Figure 1 (cartoon, rainbow, N blue to C red):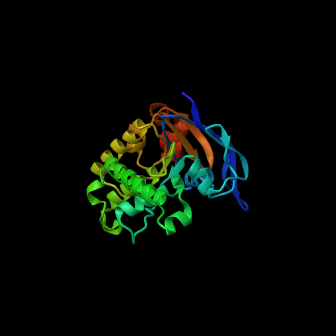
Figure 2: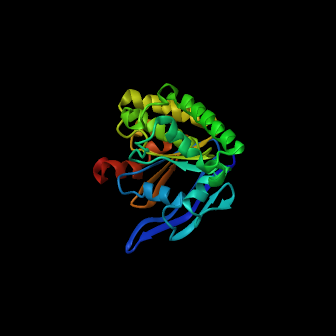
Figure 3: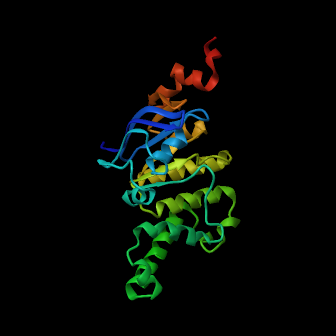
Length: 256
């Protein structure tokens, strides 16, 4: 199985604070890999580095064999990396379908001139964007709510809509940042089914998740961060029984 993402000796400092120290791991194609760790472990910082939001202090990030650290976020998105956020980020003044259509902007070709003057190519592309966006809504189970205001959706469905918008960019790698946060058990189980469905469609998934039931159930492999350092890596079973991981989550007295 080929590697799609390689994180090599990544360090990130903010002034005198080092958030990540020499973190290395890889993600294979068609894999679900989870990134877990206590609050402040550096998980979201790593996402922000991979997606170009933060500049890297040291190290290298490779995506599909190409070095991407130093590229702008929109360029990284166009290369095939999409993400969601801990706190749902939607265009609340837009409908559900319009939110998904916004995700297609990195795949449009008509440009401002063609759109402004409603040229035939632009109209054709707009129809294709609408059709593809409806297909994505159908994929995540939101097709019947396409014309509703996104702000009126229940919280769990807003999570799905954010995932749908990320899928609209046609990613090869999808970064999910705590997608189960705020969901009840039933909603979390439905989310697991969706993530597996995304993986089965050919999209690789890197998942940051505090819900251990979710992470352990669907992950092929897990990376554990603690205070910005990689603590462990392996299958869910291996990580669950790692003494250092147990200590990080339960405290040093776990084995007392």
